[in-house]
Amino acid sequence: MQNRNALKYLFLANIISGFAQGISMLAIPWYFQSVLNEESLFGMIYAGATLFTMVWSLYSGLLVDRYSRKSNFFFINLIGGVVLLGIATTGFVLGHVPMPLIAAVFVTTMLVYNIHYPALYAFAQEISKPEDYGRVNSYIEIQGQSTSVISGAFAALLISGTTNGHLNLMGFNLSMPFDITPWPLQDIFMLNAATYFLALICISLIKYKPHAERVIDTGTIYERLKAGFTYLKHHKNISVFGQASFMVFVVLIVEVHFLLPSYINNHLKLSADVYASAEIYYAIGALFAGFAIRRLFVKTNEVKAVIILMVLAAIFFFMASVTNSLLLFFFISVMFGVTNAGIRVLRITLAV
Image (cartoon, rainbow, N blue to C red):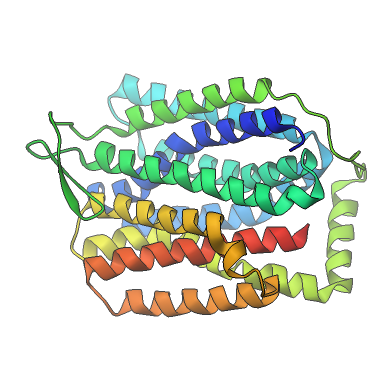
């Protein structure tokens, strides 16, 4: 495969930065829900961040197309590292992280996420041959979800700690040789900052030769947005497919960051370890999709396959609403991973 070393460093940077980022994004919603008892406040923060990222997503796409993908990766990790380092340092000085700064970490991570993955897929495709796109997309899904499994396990350990040397993880009671107290948010944010800076080192080592020469649109933001909307207007099938196929992802983002902490705390009457374990089971399902989804639908075109996965996702959402069984909830979490990640792999493969 062309640019094999460049892809290795790209994946390594993604793994390192995604590890602690995943812990932070699990810790913050749970902190608002179970520690501060400010579920409604977090809902307003999340709604405001979502509205802002809707605008930011349009602009971030222009940044990915306009500038070097390597530069995009470098600067989003630099910005994330500087912000998290400043907020973590403030937390150490004050002895706690003020609520506005906790919200700032959440919003910053969302903004970084919205440019991170478009840049990741674009960069990977820029340095790969067209016939390798499907395989590379699967690799991205596999390594990303492997990182989520690890970060979910660490999140359970750092958020809830252990009790008398025991940790509940994925429904199992694990014995530990020592007790671990829950980490305060400033420690978690400092860990996140450190991984951003480690990712910067990996990105700086990336050397590659583009598979094809890029044609960069140098028009103004307005001109480029207009061109994009005009293209979608004249290619309505692409527009409808693109918007509809994102629905499972949109619902799951709201579910994971806003609904799931409340669902586990109030409906299942369980604790933070179940919240983190759900992320691990989701990642296992997504890992399966990364390995097998293209093989499962090898005789089915991508559009039909995406529709099948969307229908399955809807069925599993309904099942989650009518059960309080922990075992069934974990199974549903696996299937959410299969359907969402499977749709993403198929959608991106079709798009290129």
